[in-house]
Amino acid sequence: MTVFEEILTTRAAEAGIVLTAAQTAQFAVYNEMLIDWNTRMNLTALTAPADVAVKHIIDSLAAYDAALFDGAATLIDVGTGAGLPGIPLAVYAPHIRVTLMDALQKRVRFLMEVTAAMELTNTRCIHARAEEAARQAEHREHYDIAVSRAVARMPVLLEYALPFVRVGGTFLALKGRAYAAEAAEGAGAARRLGGGAVAARPVHLPGLDDVRAILSVRKEKPTPKEYPRRQVK
Image (cartoon, rainbow, N blue to C red; front, side, top):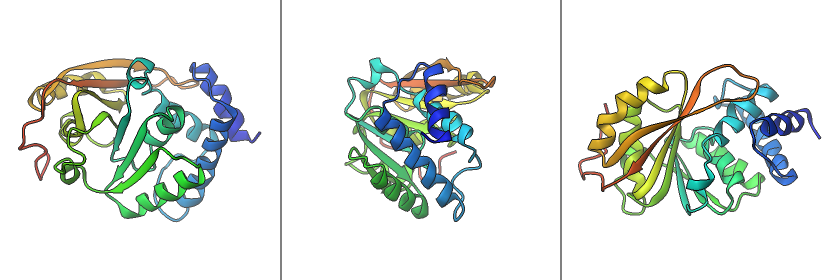
């Protein structure tokens, strides 16, 4: 077992996440390729084994909630970047079909190669801008879950992501220290876009003393046709 795999296994257990040997091996492939590709393009500023294990993978898995994910079939990661949180969630919830969407073609190439190397059969990678894809029939109000991590402030993020969610589905935003202020800031946008209240679930990452939370919004009615706007503010 590599140093990365040992750190990931230990820290995941501390977070109450049980990974199989096969899942750990898949994440090891992800770590290796992330570090390699990062020498040629900007994917992440965090490359130490402990950082990738905790701040990327376990942080992504903090979005997992069995009550929500067990009954879901489709998920879209809006502005996935290096595949976070979508790739870890695809590994951990293999019954869900995960769409990884990013606006930069170079990142999409990385996503396609890394998911193939990880032998993930439940993912697809799409090169698209959220404000354009959310207007397409194949994506609009199609997904049980939409997720996003570190893309924008909550009102903007809701306008990007909530149009992808079907009525009865849920949007999850992975947020940091300012999550309470962002939840309050996003309340009006959530209502305007067809969502309910913004709920917060604080999470703790093992070995870290920072503050993080998962903000969730349930889709209660269809998003008005004018959203998302071409220029989201």
